[in-house]
Image 1 (cartoon, one colour):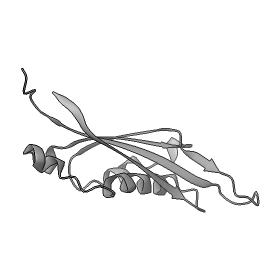
Image 2 (tube, rainbow, N blue to C red; image 1 turned 45 degrees about the vertical axis):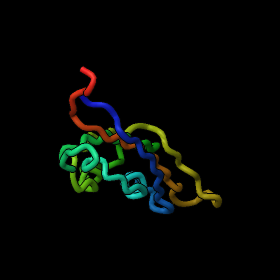
Image 3 (cartoon, one colour; image 1 turned 135 degrees about the vertical axis):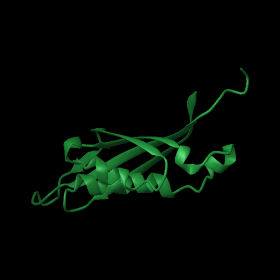
Image 4 (cartoon, rainbow, N blue to C red; image 1 turned 90 degrees about the vertical axis):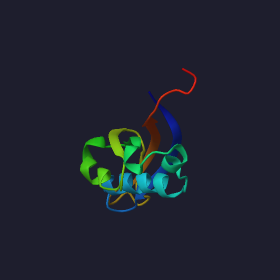
Length: 117
């Protein structure tokens, strides 16, 4: 049995280069490193046993390098899904690349037995 134990959210941007992978990576890092919960230790699991469901939203999902996002995770099994969402903000002067905003949601769970069974 596996159930979500924690959900974290993050946002990242690529201000001038319209780099969807960079914006997505910043969103993932924002979600990961803004907390210091020792979830694995709390339940007696190794960090490698963490199951991490990652959903990242950008306007052009096909432009995101999923392998680069996977490299961000130092441990655990990260399942990454990139979907259409986020926001592309046109430059005020109408020239150049838009500012790319990415949003990320990370859910952490473990395979575990229910205590009430």
